[in-house]
Image (cartoon, rainbow, N blue to C red; front, side):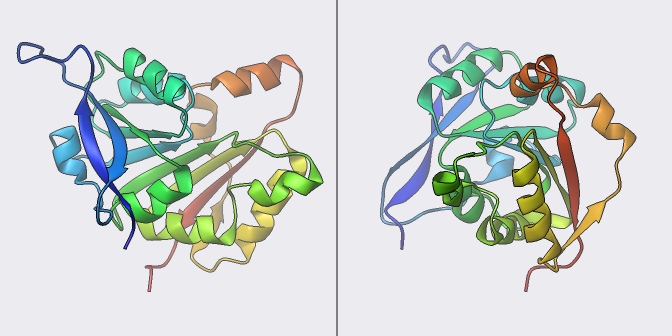
Length: 218
């Protein structure tokens, strides 16, 4: 049993006469966690794409506009960033944002076998050696991703930190449920995140990995 459950809250500007009705999701004290009802949350059934640590929502909103037949959920822990996403997504009907810790949300809030694609773009690298245990990409994280992904679902990762990239490769190679895919032309057409633009301007190389779930969760 866990001491939180998901509650859906309307955006501040929402009213009975508003055509566009968007949600921010908070965690509130309850007896236990209930997984999200994705179809109810978006008001339709469609392939679900999830941006882990969506920041200011630029990537999330651009993807949603580019692919209107998909549902896009952003997960972000910081309240101010969630508000930025909410404002940007005000007129984008296929975007929702969840304010929660990323690993908690993936493990306990997303329904099993529900996600077509996850995006983990430039996660906090925690570059100091004494802080690296805080990095999100671990075996536990990958186990949670595998459970939430549908059959043959995709996890797309990008980082500017070479040592973190090598860690991601090692964790992935030790996990039997994922296959590393070759570089795809689709990589070139993804929107550029705020962090990627910053790193490109600095001349930093970008390291990418695309993983496919190859076997069902047992």
